[in-house]
Length: 110
Image (cartoon, rainbow, N blue to C red):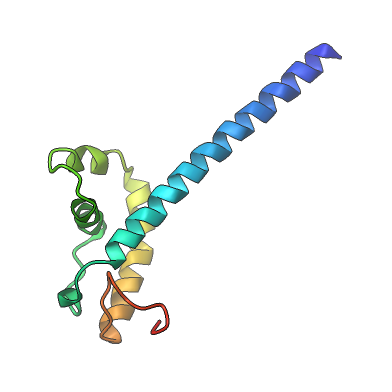
């Protein structure tokens, strides 16, 4: 019985760590999108630069040191970039077609 309780306790602890990790990643993604959406309006109609470049720009706008940015970008797997890229490219196209600023659009306009 005690062995089962220990195993259950370990499983709960592992789930808790996973949930905390997911929450940190989610917050980071929300922060990155917020920064991307705050870019100046002169970017309306600019061609899609690609996912890594968009994230690079968000890091710059957050004030990260230039030498840190390549390390942070390298930490993102190719599959993660592919997932982000699909959504970001659709958003970019939508904003371009409606003459909205990709990085700083009022949610009421969207």
